[in-house]
Every structure is written in C-alpha cells, then in structure tokens.
Amino acid sequence: MCVAVCGPPPTEANTVRTINEDGTLTYTCAAYFLPASSSVTLTCQNVGDMKEWSPSAPNLNCYNCGLTAPVVNTVITTNADGSVTYTCSDGYFPTDASLTSETLTCQTDGTFSPSSTPTITCYNCADSPPDVPGATYNHVPGEKTALYTCGSGLRQHPDTTSMEAVCVHEAAGIGTWNHNIECYGVRLVDGEYPNSGFLEVFKGGKWNVVCYDDKWDWQETSVVCKEINPALYQFGGAFHLEYYDKTPVNNENCTRLKDPNCSGSEGAVILCASTESCGPIDPKLGITCYTEDVTATGMYFALGDDPSFVQANVQVDQWYAVWVRYNGTWGRVCSDGFGNDEEDVVCKTVNSAWRGDHTGEDDVIAGQTVIAKTWHCDPATPHFLYCGNKGYNYDSQSCTKVVTVECRI
Image 1 (cartoon, rainbow, N blue to C red):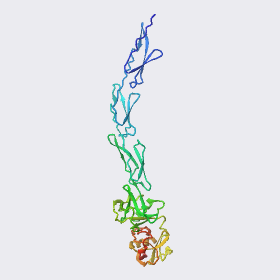
Image 2 (cartoon, rainbow, N blue to C red; image 1 turned 30 degrees about the horizontal axis):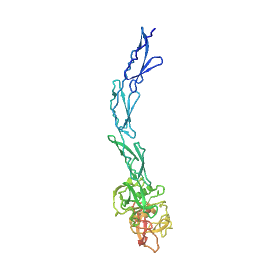
Image 3 (cartoon, helix red, strand yellow; image 1 turned 135 degrees about the horizontal axis):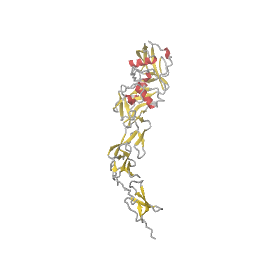
Image 4 (tube, rainbow, N blue to C red; image 1 turned 180 degrees about the vertical axis):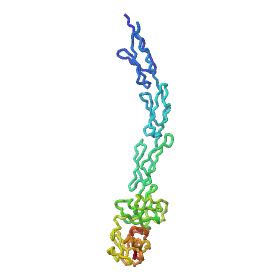
C-alpha cells in the first residue's frame, strides 16, 4: 500500500527553512531581514487521500531596507531589529553635543525612518593641543579636553577661569582648540639680598622687568610680597627706585604696571594695575620684602640720640635723629630725598596723631652707618619702613647729611 506524502516544501524569498525532527518545517526571516523575531511552522497533514503542507506557505513577507548612506567620521552598526545606529569614530566628537548617536528604523515599506540619511556629523582636532607659554598639558589621545598646569613660580592668571583647552567644532569635520589659558607670576631677581631684587612679572609668555610708576606705593608692594610668598612675606615690604643704581640682567624685556591702585588685600597686583610697554632706559622697580614685622615698636625704627632710646619717651617739639635697622644693623637715614611727606610719616610712625614740624640735618660722622637714601613716602603711608628708597645699606659714602626731625601734634 502506498502512503501519500506532502509535496516539495514551499519557498519564500528572504527566509531560512529548518527541518525539524518531527518532520515539520520552520521558516524564519534571513539575517538582516524583518520581522526578525517572527517564525512560521508548516506541518504535513492529511487532506482526504492526500497530504498537504499546512499552512500552505509561510507568508512571512520578510523585508529589509538595504544599505544606508555612509557618513564620514562615523561608524555604522546594524542592529538585530534591522535598524542602524550611527556613532562618531574613535577620536571624533559630535558636532551637536546633544546628538551623540543617531538610529534609523527600518519600516515595512523598506525605507528608513526618519530618513535614509542621518543628520549626525562628527569632527576632531587633528593637531595636538596648543602650547601655552609657561605651561604643560596632559591630554589623552582621542579626548576632547586637555588640562594645563603652570610651571614653577607661575600660576593661573587671575583673569582666566579655566585651565582646560577644549576641541570645538569649526567647519565640516574640522575642530579647533579653544582656550583662554594664561600663566602669570611675579618674582624678585638680581637682588642684593634673598628677599630683595628687581620686580619681574610673567606676561606675554616671558618674564618682564617692571618699570617704575610714580603711583606705586606701599599697598602695591604689600600685594607683590604676599604673592611671592604669603607665609614668609606676610609683612609687606619697601620699594626702591633706582634700585642700588643697578641695571637688571633682563633689561630688554620690560613692562610697566601702570596707574596701580591696590588696597593691599588683592590676590595679585595685576588685578589693580594695567600694563603698558616701557624701555631699557626707564627706571626699574626694586622690592624688598620683609620677613618680620617691621612695625614692632623700637625694633626696626627709632627716634633719638641712639636707637636704644625708649620710644615711649619721644616727645613733640624735640629734635630726634631718625634710625632704621636692616639686616641686624642700625643706621641713620640720609637726608637725600627726605622732605615734608617723609617727615610726616616718620612722626605718624611714632604716634598716629602727630605730624612733622621741622626737618633738620646732621653731618655724617666718619664711620657712621647710613642705611638708605632717596626717600619717597606717600602721606598716607602707615609706617616709615613702607616708604620707598634707593636700597638699604647702599651708597652711604655719597651721603653727607643725615636727618633729624621735630614732631608736633
């Protein structure tokens, strides 16, 4: 007896057929065709005296959307559901930061939605991060940012807000490094003492010696000294015009801190002064920073026949010699450059209610120590040792007269 069997298995485009152990046939969509999760199983069944496949055909209607348009600087990933996802290639960044990837969905009509062409675009900075004078940077290849660090003796310029350079979009596929990084610093060089020297400021990528400005005073000096070393030089200092009659080694690179107007509390002198160019022949500014509190009564400044005179005994309408101690040595103050403003500050240093009445002079005695000359005091200077001068322990041989003062209420 002959047994009827089902005819040849039906065929359908874009499908894969599997013969199961029980003789059934399972149809699924071929790879990259949709719907990927659907399947149909056909069974060989009796139909009267015949056998037929049931259902007669899989009718999966598998479809796909073909290839999508390539986009430069991107990677295309085909997903299991037939969609495709675009992401930026390694080392590239999306032009629109909110669009880090874009997925196109394959529709039943064989077209991609929302379109067959994605809108994502990517760029990179082909060049290395830019050099910044006085700074080094750390940059991981392929990263969008580079972090900069200022070198020894320098710090972030107070007018800047970040030490990062960022690769930003400039044109199609092209980026550029965007930053506002600047390193800044102040220092003393070519000095007669470790805490003294010509003032230099780091500006425009190089160290510039600072030219003297006639508005420079003790407040600016205090800011500079605390900038250099806030712990060691917390007591401010004195400034020097024609510093020891020396010429700085770096006399070609010059800048002037113009019209300074510091209160003394600023974190950087550049915050309270503008800058302008100056030249090698312009007078340069020297600074001496104090490592001790020079305002301590009778320790560094005194009036009297000798510096051991008890300052509490100083009286008005009496003549006194003016003494200053520097580096452990007491000396008389030269009368060169000493005028009414300087006399007022001397008397106010002893008693804030006093003012200068008269200024006198004594001849310099052979062997006598003269501490400083060419004085410059602003009337508001709170202590005589914050006044400007030519330099401590210098040029005493050229001084022929030393100062005496008489104070009044």
